[in-house]
Length: 390
Image (cartoon, rainbow, N blue to C red; front, side, top):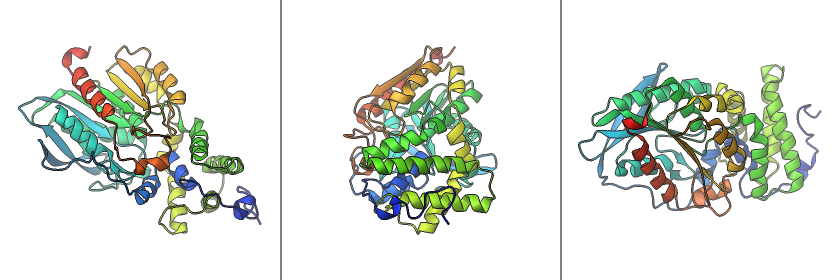
């Protein structure tokens, strides 16, 4: 008997597989929070990345640890040469488990960013997500408020470091990290500034199905496959809150994942099918996914009055500026020190891109567009002075 929540095993999904440039299941994983999406991209990476910094470095670096909510976290602080005191920034990663270097698609985004900022005169603290690298804890069980508390603890640690001006420390968050940054800023009136890269401005459930379909279409999926994919994605969404025994809910969600995998000629994820599906189902049903789908950043952003810089790439297919930038501008309309910019030719990771497709991420040599590194560095130096705060 066919599962009542999923298409029959005799459906066209079984009869035909479409070779799409990026696995549809990987797209789902990226859209639902990056779980395994980064792994898929990493396995596909073969390009060199010349921006990755190499020693010797013209600044100091030291390992640090701190705790929040009983969780021990590990990271690194880079401090410019000179006497200081210097402004500082804490980097917050996007969705899914990432290390302090922001390793994704073969790129080390936060290592590159920290290097550029520190060379420009801004101290940087970056740290491993829960359950990654040297950090303990379980990321799937963390709510956004938990991550915001971690960000606050990281800010306090950076303020206490030698040669740092405690009144000139801010936060930089990428994608989902921008949501956490906003929450942390609301709780800390001393925070000097916010930088938001590719920030969502709507609750995830309002855009996530359209996002997956948009990316899949750009990757070459056929119209008939997009129709089936939309049905499966909506089914997965409904199953999260269905009144079902847990075992039946897990089984039904795993069937949805299997049917999504059948839309392509191979997943590209080097994991056993059962493990793949269990990890995705665990992510779908997690506490953090509740926030990823339903948290609305706009009320928090409307309260902020500190300097804010938000940057989008015009070719971003995951958080398209045509969808999110207008709502972000509206939310920040009463903040005279907020700036929202769309930079032409960049994708979701703010790389120069031809198509914006996720399958390009690993193949592109540039990790972060130089214009982004320059813009963020200069803006922080210009907006982290005491006279800029009321």
